[in-house]
Length: 183
Image 1 (cartoon, rainbow, N blue to C red):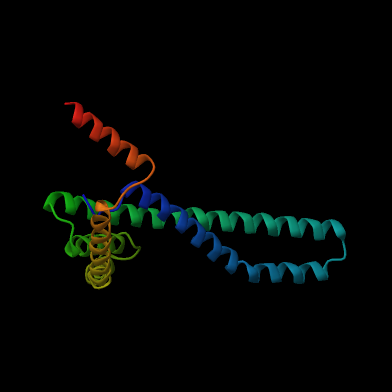
Image 2: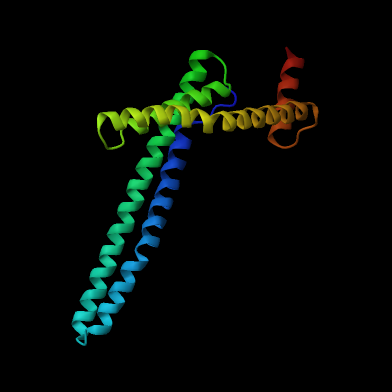
């Protein structure tokens, strides 16, 4: 359907963006840990001990950044997959791609993530209700902007159809014209 986003592509982009965000967040957080290692290095006269401390610090930092990348990628990938999957499902079932598909998908996604947050049953119920309202509040203006951008893109593409084409498009049109003349 025109205006909907490819679910698979959006999920892959979400996974990679989450990996980048999670890894960079952990890398920035580990700067203070590096300062602690440098202090230990200054107080240790033995070169072997200094080498071991540096190696251990680098291994821990690598593991921390890798873990942050994986967790961030999975979280944002799941969020993106659920959001665009629900949006496309609503568009298919309702037969129209509109603002309310985006609002419904955003509310359901935020409510689901509120449900899987840790805490008591009462706390999760609060998070679900908060997710429903916050998802709708954020997704209504985003859905409206997306719909307007799709309309503007469709206006631009429909006006260009009457102009002369070059390359492959022109060749295909010439072949179609020649075939129609022969029939």
